[in-house]
Image 1 (cartoon, rainbow, N blue to C red):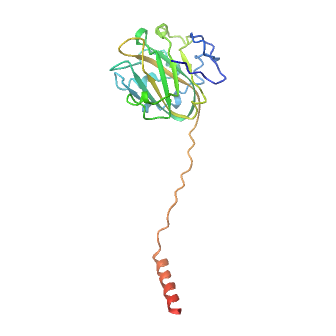
Image 2 (cartoon, rainbow, N blue to C red):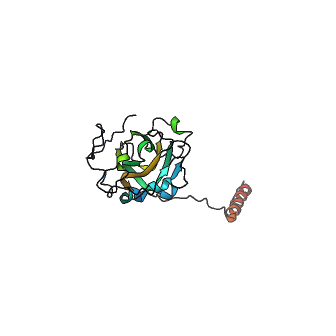
Image 3 (cartoon, one colour):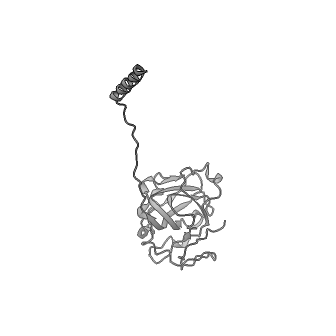
Length: 226
């Protein structure tokens, strides 16, 4: 799969083995760019999770990204789909993913914006996705608890990822295990409040019986003159 290249001016200074990524700001600069506060966590939907509600828990504040007590693991096979709604209009700059160790680690990710119809029956027919990435092995990060360790982060093509109201992430494969595990998904970018235009309602005036009576009188007068 090809990497999704970003058109933004910022780039990340971390090196994670992708020669075609041109980043400036390291992934640890998450506090000022984290979109966690505009994710509607209660309405997140996770398809193929082995424990109901586990998928919501991996969307954590940036400071809790190394909390390994919360994770989601797939159920029937290695695939996972997350539907992530926002409470604001979002410009998505990057997606950070901390996967499971070894063969539990997801190896690819696809993104779809402003769609509510993505599931396992439709996902392969929605072509092309808005973003596609190959994912790095997160095994070396499993024992880390320091904020200085960067989590693999994948930039978006921001010309596409603007005015995002919801995001769907699809993880179709892993490194070889029967199931996939993910500990953290972090979204970074900018957001603006959703403008709520005033609703203008047109009301039809109720008929006035007096007007109808006056019209009948006028018509009768016209006939009597003739």
